[in-house]
Length: 504
Image (tube, rainbow, N blue to C red; front, side, top):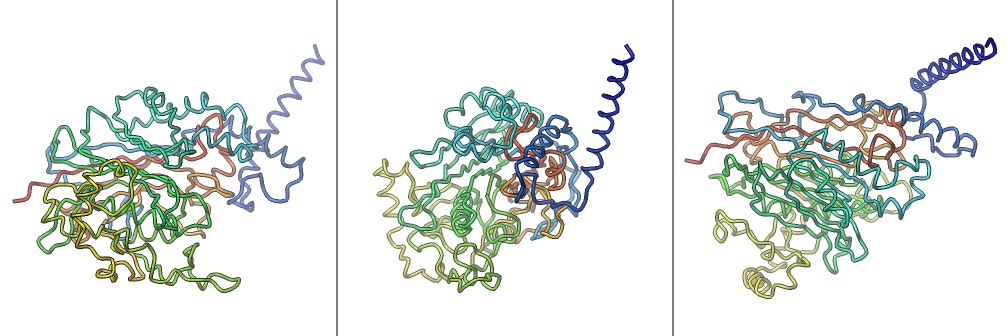
Protein backbone atom coordinates (compact mmCIF):
# COMPACT_ATOMS: atom_id res chain seq x y z
CA UNK A 1 0.00 0.00 0.00
CA UNK A 2 2.83 2.44 0.85
CA UNK A 3 4.45 1.62 -2.48
CA UNK A 4 1.21 2.33 -4.35
CA UNK A 5 0.80 5.58 -2.43
CA UNK A 6 4.30 6.70 -3.34
CA UNK A 7 3.66 5.97 -7.01
CA UNK A 8 0.46 8.01 -6.83
CA UNK A 9 2.29 10.94 -5.22
CA UNK A 10 5.06 10.76 -7.82
CA UNK A 11 2.43 10.79 -10.59
CA UNK A 12 0.76 13.92 -9.14
CA UNK A 13 4.11 15.67 -8.80
CA UNK A 14 4.98 14.80 -12.39
CA UNK A 15 1.60 16.04 -13.61
CA UNK A 16 1.96 19.34 -11.73
CA UNK A 17 5.49 19.77 -13.06
CA UNK A 18 4.27 19.16 -16.60
CA UNK A 19 1.52 21.76 -16.21
CA UNK A 20 4.01 24.24 -14.72
CA UNK A 21 6.48 23.58 -17.58
CA UNK A 22 3.76 24.05 -20.20
CA UNK A 23 2.58 27.35 -18.72
CA UNK A 24 6.14 28.62 -18.54
CA UNK A 25 7.06 27.40 -22.04
CA UNK A 26 4.04 28.93 -23.77
CA UNK A 27 4.94 32.40 -22.45
CA UNK A 28 8.41 32.50 -23.98
CA UNK A 29 8.59 35.76 -25.89
CA UNK A 30 11.86 35.36 -27.75
CA UNK A 31 10.82 32.50 -30.03
CA UNK A 32 10.08 33.06 -33.69
CA UNK A 33 6.39 33.87 -34.03
CA UNK A 34 6.19 33.08 -37.70
CA UNK A 35 7.13 29.41 -37.48
CA UNK A 36 5.66 26.38 -35.77
CA UNK A 37 7.99 23.69 -34.32
CA UNK A 38 8.38 21.93 -37.69
CA UNK A 39 11.13 24.50 -37.93
CA UNK A 40 14.24 24.61 -40.02
CA UNK A 41 17.33 22.57 -39.12
CA UNK A 42 15.57 20.34 -36.61
CA UNK A 43 17.01 16.93 -35.87
CA UNK A 44 14.81 13.86 -35.76
CA UNK A 45 14.58 13.72 -31.97
CA UNK A 46 13.49 17.32 -31.48
CA UNK A 47 11.02 17.04 -34.37
CA UNK A 48 9.42 14.01 -32.69
CA UNK A 49 9.21 15.85 -29.38
CA UNK A 50 7.64 18.91 -31.02
CA UNK A 51 5.07 16.71 -32.77
CA UNK A 52 4.08 15.16 -29.46
CA UNK A 53 3.82 18.61 -27.88
CA UNK A 54 1.69 19.84 -30.78
CA UNK A 55 -0.76 16.99 -30.26
CA UNK A 56 -0.86 17.76 -26.55
CA UNK A 57 -1.80 21.36 -27.35
CA UNK A 58 -4.50 20.24 -29.76
CA UNK A 59 -6.11 17.97 -27.20
CA UNK A 60 -6.18 20.68 -24.53
CA UNK A 61 -7.12 23.69 -26.67
CA UNK A 62 -10.03 25.85 -25.59
CA UNK A 63 -12.05 26.81 -28.68
CA UNK A 64 -13.68 29.86 -27.10
CA UNK A 65 -10.27 31.26 -26.17
CA UNK A 66 -9.39 31.92 -29.81
CA UNK A 67 -12.74 32.30 -31.56
CA UNK A 68 -15.44 34.55 -30.17
CA UNK A 69 -17.75 37.33 -31.32
CA UNK A 70 -16.51 40.84 -30.66
CA UNK A 71 -18.30 44.12 -31.38
CA UNK A 72 -16.62 46.29 -33.98
CA UNK A 73 -15.28 49.65 -32.91
CA UNK A 74 -15.02 52.58 -35.27
CA UNK A 75 -11.22 52.56 -34.94
CA UNK A 76 -10.95 48.87 -35.77
CA UNK A 77 -13.26 49.04 -38.78
CA UNK A 78 -11.92 52.20 -40.36
CA UNK A 79 -11.25 51.60 -44.04
CA UNK A 80 -9.07 53.16 -46.66
CA UNK A 81 -11.87 55.38 -47.97
CA UNK A 82 -13.64 56.44 -44.80
CA UNK A 83 -15.02 55.16 -41.54
CA UNK A 84 -18.07 53.14 -40.68
CA UNK A 85 -21.24 55.19 -40.27
CA UNK A 86 -23.11 55.23 -37.01
CA UNK A 87 -26.36 53.32 -36.81
CA UNK A 88 -29.40 55.51 -37.20
CA UNK A 89 -32.15 54.63 -34.74
CA UNK A 90 -35.19 56.31 -36.31
CA UNK A 91 -35.84 53.46 -38.71
CA UNK A 92 -38.54 50.83 -38.56
CA UNK A 93 -37.66 47.14 -38.59
CA UNK A 94 -38.77 46.84 -42.20
CA UNK A 95 -36.08 49.30 -43.26
CA UNK A 96 -33.15 47.29 -41.93
CA UNK A 97 -32.16 43.75 -41.11
CA UNK A 98 -29.29 42.02 -39.36
CA UNK A 99 -27.70 38.97 -40.94
CA UNK A 100 -24.59 36.84 -40.49
CA UNK A 101 -22.22 35.85 -43.27
CA UNK A 102 -19.55 33.17 -42.89
CA UNK A 103 -16.67 32.29 -45.22
CA UNK A 104 -14.68 29.07 -44.88
CA UNK A 105 -12.02 27.22 -46.87
CA UNK A 106 -12.85 23.72 -45.69
CA UNK A 107 -9.92 21.84 -47.35
CA UNK A 108 -11.08 19.40 -50.01
CA UNK A 109 -10.23 15.83 -49.06
CA UNK A 110 -8.79 15.09 -52.50
CA UNK A 111 -6.33 17.96 -52.05
CA UNK A 112 -5.39 16.75 -48.57
CA UNK A 113 -4.79 13.21 -49.82
CA UNK A 114 -2.80 14.32 -52.87
CA UNK A 115 -0.53 16.53 -50.71
CA UNK A 116 -0.22 14.14 -47.78
CA UNK A 117 3.39 15.18 -47.08
CA UNK A 118 2.12 18.59 -45.93
CA UNK A 119 0.22 16.90 -43.11
CA UNK A 120 2.86 14.47 -41.82
CA UNK A 121 3.08 16.36 -38.53
CA UNK A 122 -0.69 16.30 -37.97
CA UNK A 123 -2.73 13.91 -35.88
CA UNK A 124 -3.68 11.24 -38.47
CA UNK A 125 -6.98 10.60 -36.72
CA UNK A 126 -8.03 14.19 -37.41
CA UNK A 127 -7.54 14.05 -41.19
CA UNK A 128 -10.24 11.74 -42.69
CA UNK A 129 -13.23 13.53 -44.19
CA UNK A 130 -15.71 11.66 -42.02
CA UNK A 131 -14.19 13.19 -38.90
CA UNK A 132 -13.38 16.60 -40.41
CA UNK A 133 -16.84 17.14 -41.86
CA UNK A 134 -18.43 16.65 -38.43
CA UNK A 135 -16.21 19.37 -36.94
CA UNK A 136 -16.79 21.69 -39.90
CA UNK A 137 -20.56 21.32 -39.71
CA UNK A 138 -20.51 21.73 -35.93
CA UNK A 139 -18.63 25.02 -36.23
CA UNK A 140 -20.96 26.27 -38.95
CA UNK A 141 -23.97 25.35 -36.81
CA UNK A 142 -22.42 27.31 -33.93
CA UNK A 143 -22.25 30.44 -36.11
CA UNK A 144 -25.62 29.79 -37.79
CA UNK A 145 -24.86 31.93 -40.84
CA UNK A 146 -27.66 33.33 -42.97
CA UNK A 147 -25.21 33.25 -45.89
CA UNK A 148 -22.38 30.73 -46.06
CA UNK A 149 -19.52 30.94 -48.57
CA UNK A 150 -17.29 27.88 -48.90
CA UNK A 151 -14.08 27.26 -50.78
CA UNK A 152 -12.51 23.87 -51.59
CA UNK A 153 -15.79 21.99 -51.39
CA UNK A 154 -15.30 18.70 -53.23
CA UNK A 155 -17.89 18.20 -55.94
CA UNK A 156 -18.94 14.73 -54.81
CA UNK A 157 -19.30 16.03 -51.23
CA UNK A 158 -21.49 19.03 -52.11
CA UNK A 159 -24.92 17.41 -51.70
CA UNK A 160 -24.09 15.58 -48.47
CA UNK A 161 -22.46 18.73 -47.09
CA UNK A 162 -25.59 20.72 -47.83
CA UNK A 163 -27.84 18.10 -46.25
CA UNK A 164 -25.63 18.19 -43.13
CA UNK A 165 -26.38 21.88 -42.60
CA UNK A 166 -29.13 22.39 -40.03
CA UNK A 167 -30.78 25.35 -41.77
CA UNK A 168 -32.61 25.26 -45.10
CA UNK A 169 -30.22 26.75 -47.65
CA UNK A 170 -30.33 27.34 -51.36
CA UNK A 171 -26.99 26.36 -52.92
CA UNK A 172 -24.87 27.58 -55.83
CA UNK A 173 -21.81 25.51 -56.71
CA UNK A 174 -19.01 25.97 -59.23
CA UNK A 175 -16.23 23.44 -59.70
CA UNK A 176 -12.84 24.59 -60.90
CA UNK A 177 -12.81 24.37 -64.68
CA UNK A 178 -9.84 22.05 -65.19
CA UNK A 179 -10.95 18.57 -66.17
CA UNK A 180 -8.91 16.93 -63.40
CA UNK A 181 -10.07 19.36 -60.70
CA UNK A 182 -12.53 18.00 -58.14
CA UNK A 183 -13.19 20.97 -55.86
CA UNK A 184 -14.75 24.38 -56.17
CA UNK A 185 -16.66 27.19 -54.48
CA UNK A 186 -20.16 27.12 -53.03
CA UNK A 187 -22.56 29.80 -51.84
CA UNK A 188 -25.45 28.97 -49.50
CA UNK A 189 -28.28 31.36 -48.59
CA UNK A 190 -31.27 30.90 -46.30
CA UNK A 191 -34.36 30.14 -48.35
CA UNK A 192 -36.68 31.65 -45.75
CA UNK A 193 -34.79 34.96 -45.72
CA UNK A 194 -33.58 35.59 -49.28
CA UNK A 195 -34.69 35.18 -52.88
CA UNK A 196 -32.10 34.64 -55.60
CA UNK A 197 -32.45 37.46 -58.13
CA UNK A 198 -29.65 36.33 -60.43
CA UNK A 199 -26.18 34.84 -60.26
CA UNK A 200 -23.08 34.20 -62.32
CA UNK A 201 -20.36 31.58 -62.00
CA UNK A 202 -17.12 33.28 -62.97
CA UNK A 203 -14.42 31.39 -64.84
CA UNK A 204 -11.00 33.03 -64.64
CA UNK A 205 -9.50 30.86 -67.38
CA UNK A 206 -9.29 32.79 -70.63
CA UNK A 207 -7.76 31.16 -73.74
CA UNK A 208 -4.45 32.59 -74.98
CA UNK A 209 -4.11 34.98 -72.02
CA UNK A 210 -0.97 34.18 -70.05
CA UNK A 211 -2.11 35.89 -66.88
CA UNK A 212 -5.47 34.13 -67.01
CA UNK A 213 -4.45 30.56 -67.80
CA UNK A 214 -5.45 29.01 -64.47
CA UNK A 215 -8.65 27.16 -63.60
CA UNK A 216 -9.83 29.18 -60.61
CA UNK A 217 -13.46 30.28 -60.26
CA UNK A 218 -15.80 32.56 -58.34
CA UNK A 219 -19.52 32.83 -57.68
CA UNK A 220 -21.54 36.06 -57.63
CA UNK A 221 -25.13 36.05 -56.39
CA UNK A 222 -27.59 38.93 -56.18
CA UNK A 223 -30.08 38.30 -53.39
CA UNK A 224 -33.22 40.18 -52.41
CA UNK A 225 -34.84 40.24 -49.02
CA UNK A 226 -38.12 38.33 -48.87
CA UNK A 227 -39.56 40.82 -46.40
CA UNK A 228 -38.65 43.73 -48.67
CA UNK A 229 -37.66 42.80 -52.25
CA UNK A 230 -36.37 46.33 -52.80
CA UNK A 231 -33.44 45.43 -50.53
CA UNK A 232 -30.67 43.88 -52.65
CA UNK A 233 -27.38 42.33 -51.60
CA UNK A 234 -24.58 41.07 -53.87
CA UNK A 235 -22.41 38.32 -52.41
CA UNK A 236 -19.33 36.86 -54.06
CA UNK A 237 -16.90 34.14 -53.04
CA UNK A 238 -13.71 33.05 -54.75
CA UNK A 239 -10.55 31.00 -54.42
CA UNK A 240 -7.64 32.56 -56.29
CA UNK A 241 -4.43 30.95 -57.56
CA UNK A 242 -2.07 29.60 -54.88
CA UNK A 243 1.32 29.87 -56.65
CA UNK A 244 3.30 32.29 -54.41
CA UNK A 245 5.41 33.47 -57.35
CA UNK A 246 2.51 34.61 -59.55
CA UNK A 247 1.01 37.67 -57.92
CA UNK A 248 0.35 38.98 -61.42
CA UNK A 249 -2.09 36.13 -62.04
CA UNK A 250 -3.97 36.91 -58.85
CA UNK A 251 -4.14 40.60 -59.77
CA UNK A 252 -5.54 39.69 -63.20
CA UNK A 253 -8.14 37.45 -61.54
CA UNK A 254 -9.11 40.27 -59.18
CA UNK A 255 -9.50 42.62 -62.14
CA UNK A 256 -11.85 40.18 -63.88
CA UNK A 257 -13.85 39.63 -60.68
CA UNK A 258 -14.22 43.38 -60.11
CA UNK A 259 -15.50 43.81 -63.65
CA UNK A 260 -18.10 41.08 -63.10
CA UNK A 261 -19.11 42.60 -59.76
CA UNK A 262 -19.46 45.92 -61.56
CA UNK A 263 -21.82 44.24 -64.03
CA UNK A 264 -24.05 42.54 -61.44
CA UNK A 265 -24.04 45.11 -58.62
CA UNK A 266 -24.52 48.21 -60.78
CA UNK A 267 -27.75 50.02 -59.88
CA UNK A 268 -27.68 53.16 -62.01
CA UNK A 269 -25.90 56.47 -61.77
CA UNK A 270 -26.04 59.56 -59.66
CA UNK A 271 -27.06 62.90 -61.25
CA UNK A 272 -23.38 63.63 -61.87
CA UNK A 273 -22.97 60.33 -63.76
CA UNK A 274 -20.95 58.45 -61.11
CA UNK A 275 -22.00 54.77 -60.86
CA UNK A 276 -23.98 53.56 -57.88
CA UNK A 277 -24.04 49.96 -56.66
CA UNK A 278 -26.03 47.59 -54.51
CA UNK A 279 -24.19 46.56 -51.33
CA UNK A 280 -21.46 43.99 -51.98
CA UNK A 281 -19.74 41.42 -49.78
CA UNK A 282 -16.66 39.80 -51.30
CA UNK A 283 -15.01 36.95 -49.43
CA UNK A 284 -12.88 33.86 -49.87
CA UNK A 285 -9.35 32.53 -50.04
CA UNK A 286 -7.39 35.09 -52.06
CA UNK A 287 -3.98 33.45 -51.47
CA UNK A 288 -2.38 36.86 -51.01
CA UNK A 289 -1.25 38.73 -47.95
CA UNK A 290 -2.26 42.18 -46.66
CA UNK A 291 -0.70 45.21 -48.34
CA UNK A 292 0.29 43.31 -51.49
CA UNK A 293 -0.63 44.78 -54.88
CA UNK A 294 -4.06 43.06 -55.29
CA UNK A 295 -4.95 43.91 -51.68
CA UNK A 296 -4.09 47.55 -52.32
CA UNK A 297 -6.31 47.61 -55.40
CA UNK A 298 -9.24 46.14 -53.48
CA UNK A 299 -8.99 48.29 -50.37
CA UNK A 300 -7.77 51.59 -51.83
CA UNK A 301 -9.51 51.43 -55.19
CA UNK A 302 -6.31 52.28 -57.06
CA UNK A 303 -3.02 50.62 -57.99
CA UNK A 304 -0.20 51.79 -60.19
CA UNK A 305 1.27 48.61 -61.65
CA UNK A 306 3.53 49.70 -64.52
CA UNK A 307 6.68 50.02 -62.38
CA UNK A 308 6.17 46.85 -60.36
CA UNK A 309 8.15 43.67 -60.93
CA UNK A 310 6.46 41.61 -63.62
CA UNK A 311 5.45 38.54 -61.59
CA UNK A 312 5.83 39.29 -57.89
CA UNK A 313 4.34 42.80 -58.30
CA UNK A 314 6.79 44.06 -55.71
CA UNK A 315 8.49 47.37 -56.10
CA UNK A 316 11.33 46.93 -58.61
CA UNK A 317 13.68 48.75 -56.23
CA UNK A 318 13.10 46.04 -53.59
CA UNK A 319 14.50 43.30 -55.83
CA UNK A 320 18.08 42.67 -54.75
CA UNK A 321 19.46 40.29 -57.33
CA UNK A 322 19.82 40.95 -61.01
CA UNK A 323 17.77 43.10 -63.32
CA UNK A 324 14.02 42.80 -62.96
CA UNK A 325 11.53 43.41 -65.70
CA UNK A 326 8.68 45.77 -64.77
CA UNK A 327 5.11 45.08 -65.81
CA UNK A 328 4.92 48.11 -68.07
CA UNK A 329 1.67 49.72 -69.13
CA UNK A 330 0.31 46.61 -70.85
CA UNK A 331 -1.40 44.23 -68.41
CA UNK A 332 -4.52 42.46 -69.73
CA UNK A 333 -5.04 42.38 -73.51
CA UNK A 334 -7.67 44.85 -74.80
CA UNK A 335 -9.42 41.96 -76.56
CA UNK A 336 -10.85 40.90 -73.18
CA UNK A 337 -12.74 44.20 -73.09
CA UNK A 338 -11.94 44.89 -69.41
CA UNK A 339 -10.72 48.44 -68.94
CA UNK A 340 -8.18 49.69 -66.42
CA UNK A 341 -11.20 50.91 -64.44
CA UNK A 342 -12.14 47.24 -63.97
CA UNK A 343 -15.28 47.60 -66.05
CA UNK A 344 -16.51 45.89 -69.22
CA UNK A 345 -16.00 48.28 -72.12
CA UNK A 346 -18.86 46.61 -73.99
CA UNK A 347 -21.26 47.79 -71.26
CA UNK A 348 -20.23 51.42 -71.35
CA UNK A 349 -23.73 52.32 -72.67
CA UNK A 350 -25.63 49.99 -70.34
CA UNK A 351 -27.70 52.83 -68.89
CA UNK A 352 -29.29 53.25 -72.33
CA UNK A 353 -29.38 49.63 -73.47
CA UNK A 354 -30.03 47.78 -70.20
CA UNK A 355 -31.70 50.34 -67.94
CA UNK A 356 -32.84 48.68 -64.68
CA UNK A 357 -31.61 45.32 -65.99
CA UNK A 358 -28.45 43.31 -65.43
CA UNK A 359 -26.62 42.88 -68.75
CA UNK A 360 -26.25 39.16 -69.54
CA UNK A 361 -22.78 37.64 -69.30
CA UNK A 362 -22.57 36.97 -73.03
CA UNK A 363 -22.57 40.72 -73.60
CA UNK A 364 -19.00 40.77 -72.29
CA UNK A 365 -15.89 39.64 -74.18
CA UNK A 366 -14.97 37.02 -71.57
CA UNK A 367 -14.79 33.36 -72.54
CA UNK A 368 -17.15 31.12 -70.56
CA UNK A 369 -17.82 27.41 -71.00
CA UNK A 370 -21.60 28.01 -70.97
CA UNK A 371 -21.46 30.36 -73.98
CA UNK A 372 -20.08 27.92 -76.49
CA UNK A 373 -23.41 26.05 -76.56
CA UNK A 374 -25.55 29.15 -77.07
CA UNK A 375 -25.21 30.30 -80.68
CA UNK A 376 -27.98 32.88 -80.42
CA UNK A 377 -26.31 34.44 -77.39
CA UNK A 378 -22.98 34.50 -79.19
CA UNK A 379 -24.51 36.18 -82.22
CA UNK A 380 -26.21 38.80 -80.03
CA UNK A 381 -22.94 39.42 -78.24
CA UNK A 382 -21.08 39.95 -81.50
CA UNK A 383 -23.68 42.35 -82.85
CA UNK A 384 -23.87 44.33 -79.61
CA UNK A 385 -20.11 44.88 -79.56
CA UNK A 386 -19.55 45.32 -83.28
CA UNK A 387 -18.58 48.96 -82.81
CA UNK A 388 -15.98 48.08 -80.19
CA UNK A 389 -12.38 48.51 -81.34
CA UNK A 390 -9.55 47.78 -78.86
CA UNK A 391 -7.27 50.06 -80.87
CA UNK A 392 -9.81 52.89 -80.78
CA UNK A 393 -10.09 52.68 -77.00
CA UNK A 394 -6.49 51.61 -76.23
CA UNK A 395 -6.00 54.40 -73.68
CA UNK A 396 -8.58 52.67 -71.48
CA UNK A 397 -6.47 49.50 -71.35
CA UNK A 398 -2.84 50.63 -71.08
CA UNK A 399 -2.77 53.45 -68.56
CA UNK A 400 -0.28 51.74 -66.24
CA UNK A 401 -2.74 51.78 -63.34
CA UNK A 402 -5.94 50.04 -62.23
CA UNK A 403 -8.92 51.47 -60.37
CA UNK A 404 -12.50 50.56 -59.50
CA UNK A 405 -15.66 52.22 -58.22
CA UNK A 406 -16.34 50.10 -55.13
CA UNK A 407 -15.65 51.23 -51.58
CA UNK A 408 -14.33 48.07 -49.91
CA UNK A 409 -13.57 47.81 -46.21
CA UNK A 410 -12.11 44.73 -44.57
CA UNK A 411 -14.13 43.19 -41.76
CA UNK A 412 -10.84 42.28 -40.06
CA UNK A 413 -8.06 44.65 -39.17
CA UNK A 414 -4.67 43.92 -40.72
CA UNK A 415 -1.33 44.99 -39.33
CA UNK A 416 2.09 45.57 -40.82
CA UNK A 417 4.94 43.05 -40.43
CA UNK A 418 6.24 44.87 -37.37
CA UNK A 419 3.16 43.85 -35.33
CA UNK A 420 3.65 40.07 -35.29
CA UNK A 421 2.06 39.51 -31.89
CA UNK A 422 -1.18 41.24 -32.92
CA UNK A 423 -1.27 39.86 -36.46
CA UNK A 424 -4.24 37.55 -37.05
CA UNK A 425 -3.72 34.39 -39.06
CA UNK A 426 -6.06 32.38 -41.28
CA UNK A 427 -3.76 29.53 -42.37
CA UNK A 428 -0.22 28.13 -42.30
CA UNK A 429 1.95 28.43 -45.43
CA UNK A 430 5.53 27.96 -44.18
CA UNK A 431 4.46 30.47 -41.53
CA UNK A 432 1.18 31.64 -40.03
CA UNK A 433 -0.29 34.24 -42.38
CA UNK A 434 -3.54 35.85 -43.54
CA UNK A 435 -4.82 34.93 -47.01
CA UNK A 436 -8.60 34.78 -46.37
CA UNK A 437 -10.66 37.97 -46.39
CA UNK A 438 -14.13 39.36 -45.87
CA UNK A 439 -14.59 42.67 -47.71
CA UNK A 440 -17.79 44.71 -47.76
CA UNK A 441 -19.01 48.03 -49.17
CA UNK A 442 -20.41 50.47 -46.58
CA UNK A 443 -21.39 52.98 -49.29
CA UNK A 444 -23.27 52.83 -52.56
CA UNK A 445 -20.83 55.07 -54.42
CA UNK A 446 -17.40 56.64 -54.11
CA UNK A 447 -19.22 59.98 -54.15
CA UNK A 448 -21.47 59.03 -51.21
CA UNK A 449 -18.97 58.33 -48.43
CA UNK A 450 -21.18 60.00 -45.87
CA UNK A 451 -22.35 58.93 -42.43
CA UNK A 452 -25.97 59.89 -43.12
CA UNK A 453 -28.72 57.97 -44.84
CA UNK A 454 -29.46 57.06 -47.54
CA UNK A 455 -25.84 56.99 -48.57
CA UNK A 456 -24.70 53.82 -46.86
CA UNK A 457 -25.67 50.20 -47.18
CA UNK A 458 -23.91 47.97 -44.69
CA UNK A 459 -22.73 48.41 -41.15
CA UNK A 460 -20.44 45.78 -39.64
CA UNK A 461 -21.63 45.08 -36.10
CA UNK A 462 -19.49 42.15 -34.96
CA UNK A 463 -16.68 39.93 -36.21
CA UNK A 464 -15.80 36.37 -35.30
CA UNK A 465 -12.26 36.89 -34.04
CA UNK A 466 -9.29 35.18 -35.62
CA UNK A 467 -6.44 33.75 -33.53
CA UNK A 468 -3.20 35.70 -33.55
CA UNK A 469 0.06 34.35 -34.94
CA UNK A 470 1.30 33.97 -31.37
CA UNK A 471 -1.76 31.91 -30.38
CA UNK A 472 -1.42 29.72 -33.46
CA UNK A 473 2.22 28.99 -32.67
CA UNK A 474 2.00 28.30 -28.97
CA UNK A 475 -1.59 27.33 -28.22
CA UNK A 476 -3.34 25.85 -31.28
CA UNK A 477 -0.69 24.00 -33.26
CA UNK A 478 -1.20 22.16 -36.51
CA UNK A 479 -4.60 22.35 -38.18
CA UNK A 480 -6.67 20.35 -39.03
CA UNK A 481 -6.75 18.79 -35.58
CA UNK A 482 -9.37 17.33 -33.25
CA UNK A 483 -10.88 20.76 -32.73
CA UNK A 484 -10.51 22.55 -36.10
CA UNK A 485 -11.71 20.72 -39.19
CA UNK A 486 -9.70 22.57 -41.86
CA UNK A 487 -6.25 23.99 -42.51
CA UNK A 488 -7.88 27.45 -42.64
CA UNK A 489 -9.80 29.31 -39.97
CA UNK A 490 -13.32 30.50 -40.77
CA UNK A 491 -14.29 34.17 -41.06
CA UNK A 492 -17.67 35.59 -40.08
CA UNK A 493 -19.32 38.97 -39.68
CA UNK A 494 -22.61 40.24 -38.34
CA UNK A 495 -24.01 42.98 -40.59
CA UNK A 496 -26.82 45.51 -40.54
CA UNK A 497 -28.34 46.05 -43.98
CA UNK A 498 -30.21 49.33 -44.36
CA UNK A 499 -32.64 49.73 -47.25
CA UNK A 500 -32.29 53.14 -48.90
CA UNK A 501 -35.45 55.12 -49.31
CA UNK A 502 -37.02 55.08 -52.74
CA UNK A 503 -35.68 57.71 -55.08
CA UNK A 504 -38.09 60.61 -55.60
